[in-house]
Amino acid sequence: MAETIETENKKSAIKDFISTIPFNKIGIKDLMSFEKTPRNLLIAVVTVSFLAMFVIGVAIYLMHGHHAYNVTREHPWGLLIAVYIFFVVSSTGLCIVGSLGDVFKFKDYELISKRAIFGSIVTILAGFAVIAFEIGHPVTMMVYNILSPGLTSAIWWMGTLYGLYLTFMIIEFVFLLKHDMKMARIFGLTGLLVGLAAHSNLGSVFGFLNARPISNGVFYPTYFILTAFITGIFIAFIIMGLRYRLEFPEEVKKMLTGLAKIQALLISILIFFVTWKMLTDIYGGMPNRAEVAVHILGSWTFWAEVVLAMLIPLVVILKDMGKSHVLLFWVSLSGMVGIFFMRYNLVHDTQLKPLQMLKKTEYQLPPEWVQYFPSATEIMISLGGLGLCMLMYWAGTKMFNLDEETH
Image (tube, rainbow, N blue to C red; front, side):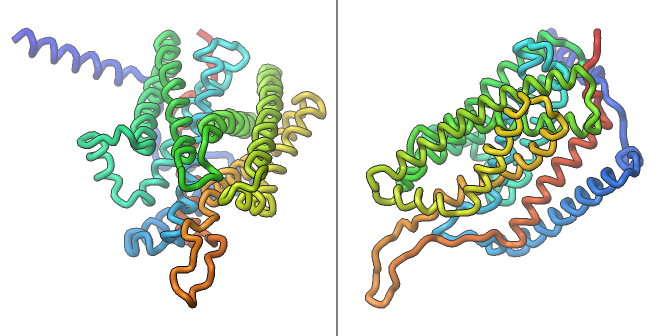
């Protein structure tokens, strides 16, 4: 009897906790209510178009399976893997930016805490939506993830840690909405640590590839954390630029200037990392690594990554130490394009060199570089993931108060 009463009390406490979460009830009409400026209409049309592409892409995938993708046995990881990494990197980066205010108590960055944490939830959900149609059997994966855990598998740890990370981020966001900063800090710090572990583990998925010398090693587990923070700051500029329509109040300018200075340091470190990574790959002419590095240096996608995500942002920030906030908004947009190429290059470059290098028959040509270009279905699902991200964030701005409040 006592146990029954205790159980009922717990259920009642949980119900009361959930019922006191502040939010606005919204419907389709609320989502459609926005100022009909050319910019807003363009964003709305792009979002709806991406969502339509997602539906079409998923329908084609459900009809044809992986035959709808241009992946092969020689190039098994395609665009959807790269886009998944793009979204989860963005999520971890936003988590780091959000933690500056609500976890580490830097007052200037509390302005963006709720938006960044909500953005981290939205981006990882978009990543899960994309990867669900690459896995093949996502429901079976979740079932056997629990029933038969692969403790020696980096991919098992990645899925498990990201699941825990999402849970902690949602709990932290709820406490932020309820203005319980003590609990938000506890779950925020826990979520940050789990998120960093998950993200470095995602890097280890590439670092553990013994058959791919271009990736194998300790570089990627640390590189992923660095580029996540850089990505989070790019998105922070985009989020605040859209929020204030590029007319920033003084306190926001102060925060963005601080973020820009951090970004300059991080990009400088990234350039240092990438330079030495390429030099050590090429030096000594190690088979299956040196020639791949030289091939990468000759690709336009690599230089798109370098110019858009590293050189242009660094030059603009150093020009006046991050005070050109409007210009940095546009630079951050181009920087996110560079970040996409960074993720795409990571996945594609790993598989450039064919594993079978010898002729098996007399009339067989020697293997050459592995060629890959995403199919229309892969592109539609990937853009659809971006559409889902935009829709969820827009719905969140309607449902929750994401601005800092004084209490």
